[in-house]
Amino acid sequence: MSMQPGWMMMRSLSKDGSVRDAELPPGTTARVLSYAKPLTGPIVVFLVVVVLGSMTVVATPLLLARIVDDGVTPGNHGLVTRLAVLVAVLAVAEALLGLVQRWMSSRIGEGLIYVLRTQVFDHVLRQPIAFFTRAQTGALVSRVNSDVMGAQQAFTTVLSSVVSNAVSLVLIVGAMAALSWQLTLGALLLVPVFLVPARWVGQRLSGLTREQMNLNADMGSRMTERFNVAGALLVKLFGHHETEHREYADRAARVRDIGVRIAWNRSVFMVSLGLVAALATAMVYGFGGHMAINGSLSVGSLIALATLLGRLYGPLTAISNVRVDVMTALVSFSRIFEVLDLPPMITEKPGARPLPEGPLSVEFDHVSFAYPTADQVSLTSLEATAHGDRLGGGEVLTDITATVQPGQMVALVGPSGAGKTTLTTLVARLYDPSSGAVRLGGVDLRDATLDSVRDAVGVVTQEAHLFHDTIRANLAYAKPDATDAEMEEALRSAQVWNLVERLPSGLDTVVGDRGHRLSGGEKQRMAVARLLLKAPRVVVLDEATAHLDSESEAALQHALDHALHGRTSLVIAHRLSTVRDADRILVVDEGRIVEQGQHEDLLAADGVYAELYRTQFRQARSVVD
Ligand SMILES: Nc1ncnc2c1ncn2[C@@H]1O[C@H](COP(=O)(O)OP(=O)(O)O)[C@@H](O)[C@H]1O
Ligand SMILES: [Mg+2]
Image (cartoon, rainbow, N blue to C red; front, side):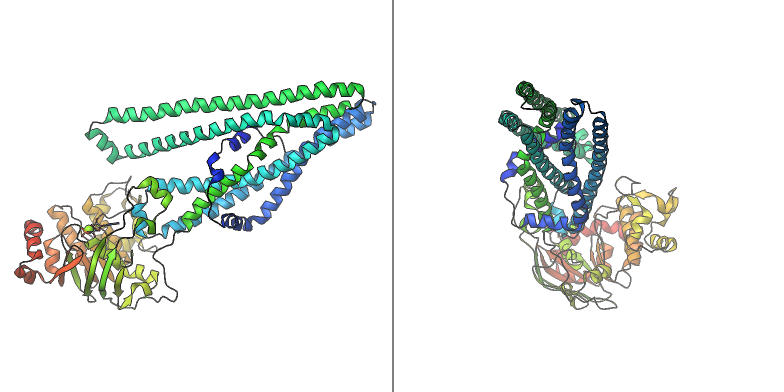
């Protein structure tokens, strides 16, 4: 194929030297090859095309030699024309082969990206919620993106550069030796003169490039953090404009200086590459010219030698760095495999059965729970940059035993940090208990199908989240085939139809982070509407703690009456009206149930509940009662 442009060689050279010695888990290579297997067809075509392309690189100079020696020198017009046409045909063939090679290479590369990307996305989504509480989203996203791209790039360049350069090198050296072994030897003696400084520049470049990438990543995450509303607000409120500016400018200046040094090193490399090639050409003509005069070398061969020589150093450089290229590819792949190998903690047992039909009871049977440690749920390599703490979680819930009968509403109350939210996450099987069992309708959640648990349990969290999408799309998340009429009814029951009705685009209004801003109470009612559409048999509700004005308070109350009616429900209560309506109140403190019963009885007992009532619930009375 046509000679590699200089920067292609530099890409090779600028690779991180350290990856050569990276430790790879056994079986990585075999696993990478398993990804190549479905692409066998395109890969074979690609390799054949690459080999044919390399052959044209050598064939053209040899044909030129024939034109001079057999056509021009003896004055054979016919042969000159025929050979010139052949050279033209070869040029067209080379161009076509180049197109096919690029087409195949992008098919292989994009095919690989598609598979890796979809696998990683699917796998990460299957991770337990604990994984997401630990992983720094930005770092995770950029890691997944850059590794997938890196693996693809390395895979196709290794494939093409190893094969095409190896073939080119053998053919070029072979052809040169056949023309004149003495001159070939001379040219090869120049190789170390070139390779030694090339490697040195390569190492410097790899260090500089890595530093530049780190700085750029750092500036990027700084901007992401500062350029959103919350970050910008902090900067302004604390008056840190100057410091922010200085820190950013420091990094930008270093990126600038490194950029200049990288460009300089590259130029030195390119200029010396040109210099060596020019010196070699001088040598070939210097010695070869005398040989041609003496008759030991034909003029055509001399020209061919000089042309071939120009194509020798590129593949040589690339080949000398093949090991680094291969290792870089393997490292990218192994980092992706690391993600794919994270075990999903919540899995469906073989032979799992669906939950029984009809109203369901919720039963906690001697449940204890500790949040999983970092080692269990996150990527070590990601965690190192994201968090410092590697501590395991202590026990958050201890020996909880309680039952919510079908159709009952049970309120959970307790001081902040007592473990109320944690207890409710077990009902939706976001986590499995460390010991004991959580049962719905008498079936241990670990024996039930995941789908039936997701269908049966509906959750409204304290910080209700809406996707940055239309209201319609957010509601359809609960019930994809919901009609407009059903949505309207759900919104009415949740006491937010008034609001939606007033919006200019109605159901098609974009809400969420960057869309129409909803207040905390409106968001929660929207989440209740979503829950109503889902119509789960078990409802888990974490009441918003934020003080609502009396109107939204009353609205939310109506919404909840609808949502909870006829359903088994577990409500983390912050409002007096909820605890009063509850069939039973569980008082949680430091991970244990310390009291249970009804409002009046618990007040009379004058324990933790009575204290909570005095501090937390009583002020709310004026609003609610
Ligand atoms: N994802 C988590 N990882 C580790 N510990 C957590 C996590 N979430 C909550 N905790 C800890 O568990 C305890 C109970 O928290 P939580 O159930 O949210 O309390 P409550 O809802 O009663 O205020 C707290 O000490 C809290 O720090
Ligand atoms: Mg909570």
